[in-house]
Length: 297
Ligand SMILES: C[S@@+](CC[C@H](N)C(=O)[O-])C[C@H]1O[C@@H](n2cnc3c(N)ncnc32)[C@H](O)[C@@H]1O
View: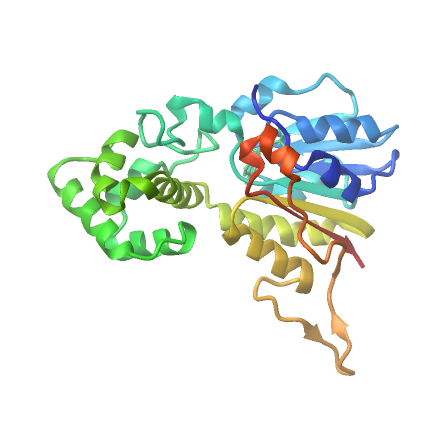
């Protein structure tokens, strides 16, 4: 299976779909969420984005669907070009698909030996191999700290730098071999998952793209239009949470002259929505998912 959709019912319900409305699925993947949106649409339209060319293999044959193989950071321009200045709802199910993690040659998983690639967009210039071999030590440290949420980053980076001085680090197994001694066997998988997460976020500029996406969603949503975002790690979730609450990434609520709060969005679910025990049992990749929904004021 290309990808099993996560928090499907909850996210689609959160969008409160108007059958005649215009919707955006910013992360088409295997089309699981898009399919559900189309089921709820009458004469409405769905504009879907995905930067990975493999996602194109699963485009549904439906005249109400327009698929754009591009990064969602350009969403607003594409919509404008299509003649849609405003939309009724926007959904993003962030990060990688199961297809990415299960396709060894893409280099996203430490379970397989493969070239260190990790690009979601196969035409993008930066690969994980470039980051590992060419970034200076302080930038690597910052990346592992910020995007991997790792603490002892100095010794991790020292091990990488020492190894790359001997030999160019090209493959996932070369990298995991270098880092094996950095953590006890018991925690190894968790540790490697964080290393790979950090690299992936950097290679795909995930945080930067998310910020562009959120800002543009706010601009294109109609009044009472809904924004639903599913994230999979705390770095992303913090950005989404702050933005939905305050309209900025610092999470500081602006006030007008009279002290009234100025927030462009109204948070719908005060408590973050997470998958049920049952969903996690049937799809382990759902375990870290967090859904937040907001409405344009
Ligand atoms: C978690 S999957 C989405 C799965 C989808 N909801 C489904 O049910 O099949 C995330 C997808 O978003 C895409 N993606 C991630 N960041 C993107 C970006 N900045 N622009 C466009 N697509 C992106 C990935 O290529 C991947 O296919």
